[in-house]
Image (tube, rainbow, N blue to C red; front, side, top):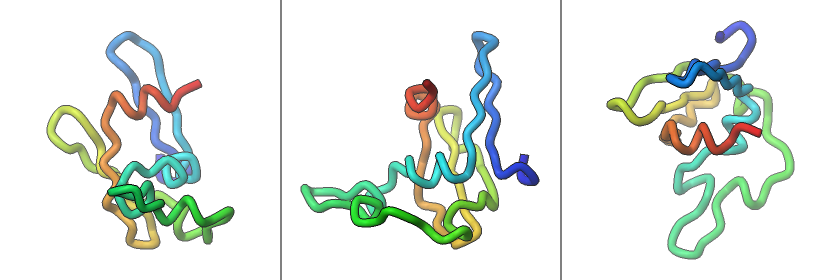
Length: 90
């Protein structure tokens, strides 16, 4: 749903989840954004992101367990497992 800047998932149990580009960007699980080895990530130091960081550009399937999400800023290193995405829903 690129026009709406969102990703919608229909789960096997019949439920659906919809995530906006903004939600996905702030939830990016990559080491650059979340940090590693005790060092905080980039998103830990920010309160706001430019619009190009929040716009979805592409979503690709990684095996049968995750999506790799790309943003118009070029950031595309986050691998969002289905379990992680399911945990993001309210």
